[in-house]
Every structure is written in structure tokens, then in C-alpha cells.
Amino acid sequence: MTDEKPLYITNPEKWLNDLTQGTDFVGIVFFEGSWSKYDKHYLQKLGKYNKDKMQAEGLKLIAWTSEGAEGAKKADELWGLTKDYGYAEVIGDESNALATYLIDDCILEHLTTKTPEEAKVQNVVGTYPNGIVQP
Image 1 (cartoon, rainbow, N blue to C red):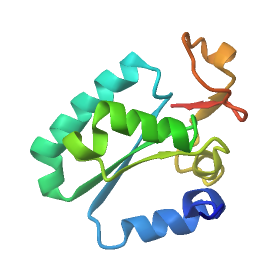
Image 2: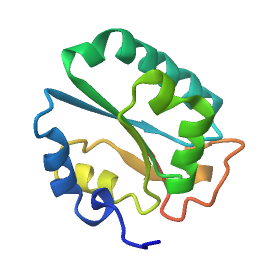
Image 3: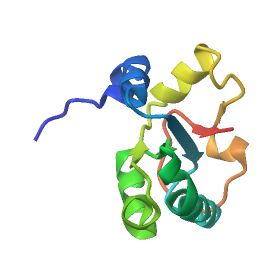
Image 4: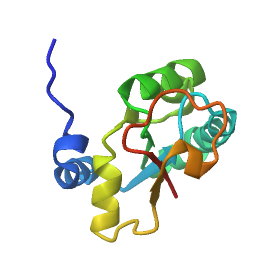
């Protein structure tokens, strides 16, 4: 087993460039974590629409959480995001490297990172050592 970090953590710009090669559209949806019933609802609704309509138009849809890799895996397994709703992948990055890149490069400059307390989230699972990313 390797401890090598994924490209979206080590080099978010290259990851985005590689991701968009040969793809008409890429959508990255931020969510708080596997514990959020609201996130489950909207990711599944968006995923259903994606699978029914947008995927045929060339959209590659990705769900991203700052809960970390285990939280992303848990959300995907419990909610069926890749299996049932057409998400290309569900990724977790507790370092928030991708979000930091998107903010610093003025791609999504209005993203914010807050502690769970500042974000006023309830029933949070996990520690979020670098905060929760929110639009």
C-alpha cells in the first residue's frame, strides 16, 4: 500500500488540466460530509439529473469534501453517488489543497473555509483539521 497523495492534493492545477482534457464539461460539487442529510439529498437529486440529462451532453460530475478520503468513500458507498447517480468520482481532501488553489487562482474566489463551529454545522463527524470548505 502506498502513502502517495493524489494529484488533486499535490498539484491541483495539473489535476484540473488533466481532468478537463477530452471532456466537454466538468462540474465539481462541494459538500460538507458524509454525515449531512442535506448533502445526501442534493447530491442525489443533482446526480439523478446528471444521469438522466447532463451526462449525455458530456458532463463529468465530481463530488468533493474536506471531510477527507474516508468521508468521501463513506458518502459514495452509503449514497451510491458513482454507482447509482453517475458521479465520475467522489473525493475527499482534508488539506483543502484544491479549494485553496481555486480561491488563490480566482477561479472560485468566494469559497470560504470555516471551522465546524463557524459554519454552524450540527452532527459533524470528523475533525476537519483545516476547516470545512463552503461556497
